[in-house]
Image: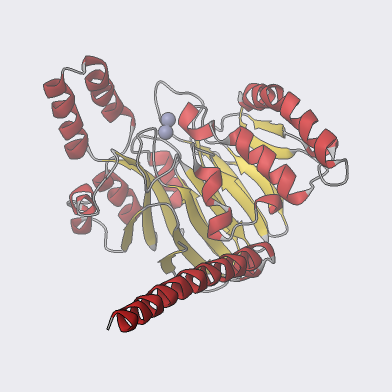
Length: 357
Ligand SMILES: [Zn+2]
Ligand SMILES: [Zn+2]
């Protein structure tokens, strides 16, 4: 009897060990498959020709585990571009199948820190992943020169270490950092074409984010499709003008009702500083209902909300965030989170909505 128990025990232990070892092997095989999928370009090839928008950061300065700082990846044909680079956003690019080494341009909407604080990391990753021989073009209104110069200076020692370690072929010193491409803030009603190459046109226009000047949004046109990205703004008639008849509006949004919960909570907690900040921020953003009003008036096919304020720790809060929106706007509305993906296949009217992650 004793011997039988020992045999059974041995069998159980053996199969548990087998499952453990095989479980590990399975995990390693899966990991390897994912690495090959991303590095071979297979993940990138899945983006259809047209305009593809992926939220690399759906959030704001407020910590939210599902929403990094503001970042919108726009893939137009084979061109990979990024609008704003918030904290944590760079780490979402590769997992979303976006080849960081192929990023051709960055566009900055304004110089609030939450929109630029990932720029140093992006410039370094793009250089290291692509062995790029020229710095990353960083477009922005006047003032972008100072931002790029600052990041270049801060990263100068790191740039030197990396070329010294990996060599000129892998990390050519000519490709480190960024190069500013500044433009004048366009007057209301006027757009400035900041890029026009290979059928991809990018137009900057003024938005209203007082007291922050300059502040712009961008419109992307490619393959008969169009996207407008708001940056930070109050409800803007100028933005609405540039969004007229476009396929997708990616608009920032702040819920006053939910921010009031923060204000009340900060009051109760005796956090006077935080309380005042929650009061101040309401005045220079757009509510979800106002974003819906713009989307409806401009006749866009879909509305993707990003720069979500405040953080939404539970999915059930999405419903409160967009309360009243469906009464105003009759297209698709998406409360953005990291990985929200919208695809606009070229020369069609299709809008495909999903999530890459
Ligand atoms: Zn912001
Ligand atoms: Zn801002």
